[in-house]
Length: 196
Image 1 (cartoon, rainbow, N blue to C red):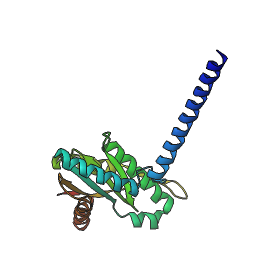
Image 2: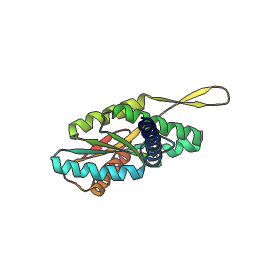
Image 3: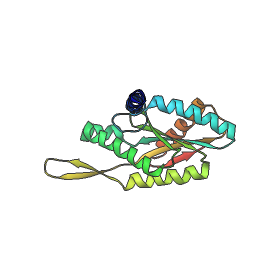
Image 4: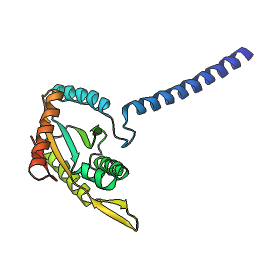
């Protein structure tokens, strides 16, 4: 009887240790996949996820939208208001992207600098346009606080968006297409989107 009790206690101890180890692994995995400044997924996670979602879209014959989002005039914000304000802008952009792209399967990722990628599985051109409109409107309505010597001022912000939508397309081609569409928006006045 005593041996059984001791054995059960050991099993419970091992279960508790296992649970603690699983928590630590999850925490470390999060740190490896998440951008520390914005809490968006990082570039490494993005590349893996885009490859997996591209394969899934091909297998299931369903559209996959890839949205490239760039904060307009970001260098001027950093130069004129400082990097702390620039960091706040990036954090707010991610927050708004997460609000607008909130399905369990949507993934907001920091691609680099002030560029973000949003992976939108099972999203066609019409659905992408609706989301891009919402992102543009939500971010344009946002006011970013900036402290001055005497008061708090509020900055306006806009984003430009390029959206690639396809069923069968290599991940690199999706990125290139979204990038080209983004730069067509940048060259035609910013604060808008293009879908292709």
